[in-house]
Image (cartoon, rainbow, N blue to C red; front, side, top):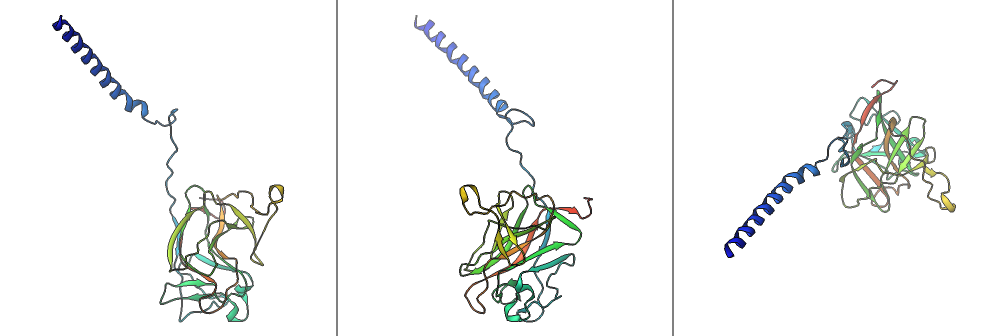
Amino acid sequence: MLRRIAIVLFGLIVCAGLAFEGDAQQAPRSGVQRQGGRGRGPEVQSSPPLFFKETWKITGPAHAIAPGEVVVTNPNLEFKMYGPSATASDPNKRIWISGPPGPTNIWTGMCATPFAATLRDKDNFVDLTGLAKVRWTTRASGFHAVRPLIKLMDGTFLVGDHAESSTTTFLESEFAFAGLRWMKLDIDRIVTIGRYGPVGEASNWADAPDLSKVDEVGFVDLMPGSGHGSGGYVNVASFELYGKPVRRGGGN
């Protein structure tokens, strides 16, 4: 009797082991995510290429940027300045370029009004969809913040809801355009404009823009500078933009 029981138990153990082995072999197959299958997960997008990198060019000590002065190192880029502080006759109320001992940078400390600046590629729009991003080196003083700015094909200027406000040192950081919310910018006065949201709330968020052909990309400081010294300003040093080029005129 004991012998029969032992034989039966051995048979059950062998069968159970074979069944477990079969399940183990099938499990990985059922978990594989195939292209177009029901178990397909999110697609992994590739990062876009570097569209441009600008580190600025300074001649001499820190100074107000003169009309027509070239401060870009990339000859295919145009540096655009906006607001009253871009063209003020008094250099002590205008945008400056600063340099050593820190990195060469655009400095808003002397701006008597809010200030905006962009970079424009002469040959290409930039596609900022997908994983397009900016990597920049910034610093701020007081409650000032560096915010992204774009100009669309139709001339609309938009400010993103991302902000950098490192006061400790020049800090390299990056952000993606995907998921940003935008407000329209009055480019002459450098102030946000818009409409009341639901039930009268005052967020002023703009409709989601088409980022497939963006004309200019840059930054804005929505507060006037406080002058020399540590009061209120932003510094923008290196500026890298990652996105796909789109030829002006329609071709890729």
